[in-house]
Length: 359
Image (cartoon, rainbow, N blue to C red; front, side, top):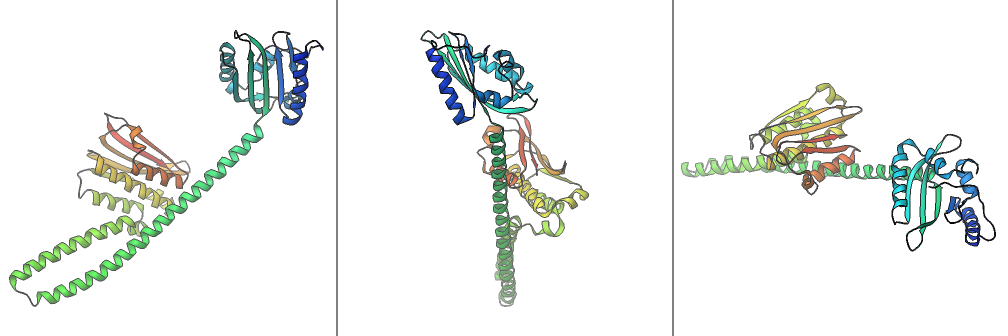
C-alpha cells in the first residue's frame, strides 16, 4: 500500500481517466473494493466499493498507507506488511493474500487482497492497482463445507469399520462352529480307533491326535483375533490382558495393561473395540519389529475423550518411513473413523517408541 489522496485528475490524464471509468464499471459487476495509484501523476482513486466494503469516507482513506496499515488485524499485521514490502522491493508484479481488516464500526472482515505492480522496462514502479474483496462469507461457507465433508468421511470410515467387525464376527463364529463339529467327530473316531489298534499304532495315533489338537488350537487363536469374544463378555481390560498373554508365549517382551475399572465402564462398546484393534496392531508391530524388553498399554481420560498410549523401550525409527507402513495406515484409518487424533513419538538411534491415540 502507498500514500494516496482523493481523486485528482483532468481530461489530460487520459490513461488514468480511462482507468477510473473502467474500474467504476468493473466494481458494479464484482462488488469489490478497487483502488489505483499513479506514481507519475501522483493521483489516487478509490471506487465506491471501498466505501461500501469498510464504511470509511474518502477523507479517512486519504493517507492510504497509514489507513491500511493501522487497520490490519494484529494477528496478520506483521506477516502481511512484510509480504507487501517484499513485493514492492522486488521485481515481482503480483501479490495476493487473505487477512482480517477492521471496518469503520470496529468489526473485522476477512479480506482477499490482490495487488498488481506496473513497472517500466527499467523496473521503476509506475502504478499500483489493488482489489479488496470481502471473503468472510465465502470462508464461512468453505469451513461449513469442510465440516460436512469431514462428517461424511467419518461416517463412511465408521461404516467400513463396523462392516469389517461384523464380517470378522461372522467368520469367527463360523470357524468356531465348524471346528467344534470337526473336533467332536474326530474324537469319536479316535476313541473307536484306539479299541482296534496295537500298541505301536496307538502311539502313532496319539501323536496324530496331539498334532490335530495343536492345529485346531491355532485356528481358534486366529478366530479369537478375528473377533475377541472376551471383549464383549468380560470387557476391554481382560481382552487386552489376554492379547498380551498370547504375545508373551512367543516373545520375551513384558507388557503391562493399565486401565482403570471406573474408566472402562464409561467407554462404549464401539470405542472399546477400536481401542482394542489399535492396541492389537501395535502389539503385533512390537512383536515383529521391536527389540524391546518392556512395554505398556495405557488407557486414560483426555477431556471428553479417551487416550490410548502404547509404549515400548525398543529401538526408535525414522518417523518419515512410518507413513508407508500398512500397520500405521490401519491405525490412522481406525482413528479417523471416530474423529480422533493419532501421533507417534520416536527418534532414529534412540530407545523408545510411543503411539498416542485420542478418540
